[in-house]
Length: 615
Image (tube, rainbow, N blue to C red):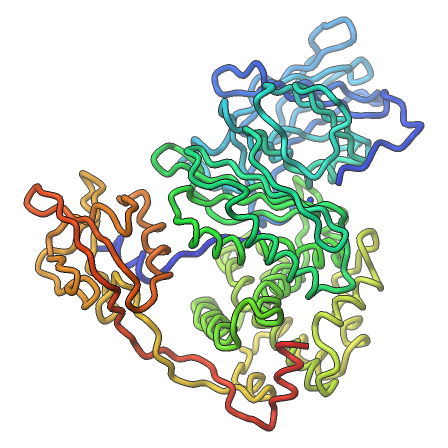
C-alpha cells in the first residue's frame, strides 16, 4: 500500500492559523461458492448480493466479511457496510441467522442452507464516517463501481479453500477492468472464477464507461483503466509515461516474471463532491487500485503515478514471491501480522526509487535527495523502535502510529542492506540479487517462518548483513546512515533547493476563510518574492493558480502542483481584491534555501557507487 503524504509541515502550519484461475476441472457446482453482484438494479445506493452456498454437513455455517485485508495494516470491519443479511433453504424458507460481531453471521440448520442474500453500502461517499483508505474502499454510483471484492463478498470459515464463481450483472454501458478473465460473452453479465477466496480478494474490478489502453512489456500484458468523472484525464493521455515506467521496471527486475497480466485501475476523485479523499494505492499480485484527485494537473498526476504505481508493481517481488506464513495463510478476522513489514513495504519502496536512477528516469542527485528526505521523515518517529516488533504489532498502539515509517525507515533499511551487500561483494551483488535468491528458495506458494528469515538472508549473503539485521532491524539501535553512505563515497552536504511558493522563511502566508472555504493571503503578512513580483497583496483571495481554481477542499492539489514549478516558468494567478477579479501574470521567482542533502564526494568509490546505482 502506498499513501500520498503531502507537504506535511506546510499543511499542518496552515491549518493551525492482483489473472483469475479457472475452477479445477471436475469441481462440481455444489463445491463452489457462487456469488452474484447485481449492478443493474441498485436501490438506495446499495448493491444486492446473492450467495449460492456449497453444501454443509455441519449444524451451523458462519459467514464473514473481512475485518482486515492484506496490504492495509488496519482493522476496517467491512461487515459494517452489510445490511439485511438473510439465509434460505432450497424451498425459499428463511433460516435463523444470528449476528455475532460486526463482521460475522451464523446460520442455523446449515445442512439445509442453499442461499444467502444481503445489501452492500459503499464507502466513498461517507468517508467522513470511517477511516478506510480509499483504494481499499468501494464505490457505488451509476457511472462507476469500484469493486474491491473484499467489500462485497465474504467467506465461510470452513470453506476458505473452496473455489468461487463470481457473476456480475451490469449495465451495457459499463465495462469491467480487471486482471481476471471474463468467461461470459454477454455485454451485461461477466463471470469470473477463482480457486479460493484469497485469490478473489486479490482481484479488484472497476466498472465504468470504457476508457482503457493495453500494451505488452516483455511478455506481460498491461491494462491501464481510468475513471475520470468530468473527463479531464484519459487512459490514452497517461499511457506513454506508464509504459515507459513499467518497461523500465521490467528491465530492472530482470529474472522476476511473477504474472502474465497486470492491471492499473485509476479512480480520479471529484473533490467538489462527497467522494474519495484518501489518495494513494493498494497493491495486489496482478493489479493496483489507485485513487487520486481529478483536479490535479496532468503533469503532476503523472509524476505522482510514477512513484505510486511503481511502488505497487514492485510488490510482485514481495510479498507475492517472498512472504511468511502469516501472509500465505492470512486470517481476515483474527490476523497475525508478520515481523517483516520492513521487507514487504520497505524493500518495495526502495526499489520504486532505485529503479528510477538505475534506468535513467531520475538523476543521482534526485535519488540522493529522496533518500535524504526519508532520513528526515523517519526521524519524526521513535528511531529506537525495533522494526520487527513494530511490524508484528502494527495493529495496536504505539506501533500503529509508526506504520507510515515503513515507507521512510523501511526503505532506508533496504538501502543500507543493499550498500552492505555491494561492499561485501565488491560491487558484484546487491539486494535485488538477494531477492532473486529468496524467490527461488521460497516462491509464491512456499512461505517462510518469520523467525527463520534473518538466518536465511545471512546464509545467502554475508555475516555483516546478518549483523545489520540483528542490530538495526530487530534491535533498537538507530542506523548510522552516514557510515553506510560513506561506503559508497557519498557524504552529507548543504545544497540549495527552492522553497515552496506558499512559504516565506519557512512560514506560510496563506490561510483559509472557514465560512467561504476561500484561500487568502494573510492580511499584513509579508509575501515572498514569488508573489510580490506578480503583484499579489496581503488580503487578496487566491481564486486560481495557473488556470485551476482552488479552495479549502483542493488546497492539497494546489500545493502539490506548485512543487513542479521551475525558475522563470510562466505563472498566472487570479485573485479577488475589493470584490474584483484581477489576473496577475509573470515568471516564477523561486526563493532558494539551504537544505541538508547528500553528494558523491569520494572518487575512489566511483566504481562501487556505480554498481550500486547502475548495476
